[in-house]
Image (tube, one colour):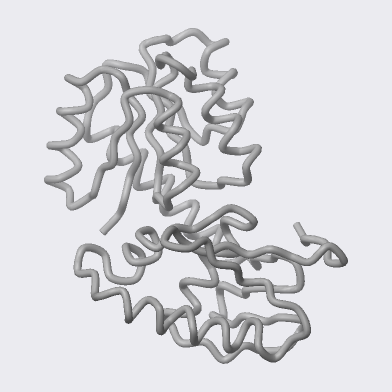
Length: 231
């Protein structure tokens, strides 16, 4: 199931979009101000972000710019009542992928959303993710550390991909569980076992440990001081 984040302070629009996306088998998370939206976008993984331009606390342009500065590549579709050329360019200049003016047709919105998700998925599928001495070849489904092939299961590969995509930021246990099992989450021992398997491949054969734990919250990657992240 696709997962979207809506950052919109108009509750009527939010309610309408909740109903619409639910009917189209998409899960929608919601924030009614820019600060909360930024927090959710940084701490979770979404297929797309629907971002209003005029928001309390933090405006949409600032939210978009901070997400891009943090390395978040999730597609962003800006929704706004402002329709001047300058407003559109401001959003696109700071990293928004598309722009839709209110009021909008729901079918057009959905088509734009799906196009952005497909475009982003196609880009990712041909790329290589890197952090420190880790590289993930997404097209082949192989991962390496110091050029050594890691023997990963599909689940541990997914976890490592999430960690590298967000590095050096934290990835929560809840977000990992959602990516692996959606709403059918097993008990904590299953996730703990996957992390143990990943650590046995990612850290144990090497001199330095890169996989770190924040107790009760989640996991993150951290290169040693003598290492340097690779962009």
